[in-house]
Length: 366
Image (cartoon, helix red, strand yellow):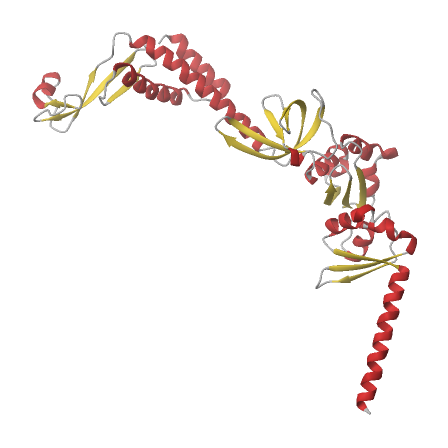
């Protein structure tokens, strides 16, 4: 091996962070395997590479014994002391057995090892880079479709958008630039596998952090997200500064901030709700755009009983129960919604039952 090879290793160490000593150790191990494969030897050998001269030597290791039973692994004390009088029984003697043509084999093997280590190093760096970005969003280009999976080019590697993480009804055309949420990064034998999502609530949260400076700076806090991807979402926001309106900050001038997010999510409707530590007020806000008359909280059962005007009942429940379902996810309360007339009917029914029970109690007393 020439000095150019070792200079290339030192350059790799600076550029890729792969230690030269480690590469040389791996090359030595690979050369041992190459020696045994090419020369059919079962000897106990090791390979020594001199970084200064570039010389490669194969050394057979033999145990010093009185009587040799296996010449491939043993050497007699007499023969050992001919090499060096200081050898004693049970010592290990190293004898050079480098084949004449071994330089060519060494060069080929070294090249293969370096290429392999480079691939491993690059995979490792890509894994570290994206593993640290789990829970973040990245922009990628739609590359191609394999079966029902969408492969997205992230520059250094590809990400996989599985069917379950694709937004209902969304089309992915080659060359489209989309934002995706990194759900998980796995280490595999073929390199890092990056699983991404367009349906994860975290995508909506990160998009608001990008579009709303007040959230990024920590003035406005995004408390919770409830999402039915491709259809509708609700977010609860709170301001740490009483002079800053959290809902207005998220909507932006003329609705520009929230509209940019709606466009990225292909028209998904977004309700921005003001968070409150008072569950009564929070539940009422969460049912927006419906107007709420009263909210009764049952702490033990974690139920919120809500009364709305008759004409607001369908709006409060939403299409196929979507508004009520999202409000329940957002607040963490089970929400029971009744119209004003329904509530009046049930109250009247309860009053009649109570009156009937009182009469029975009086009869019993008589």
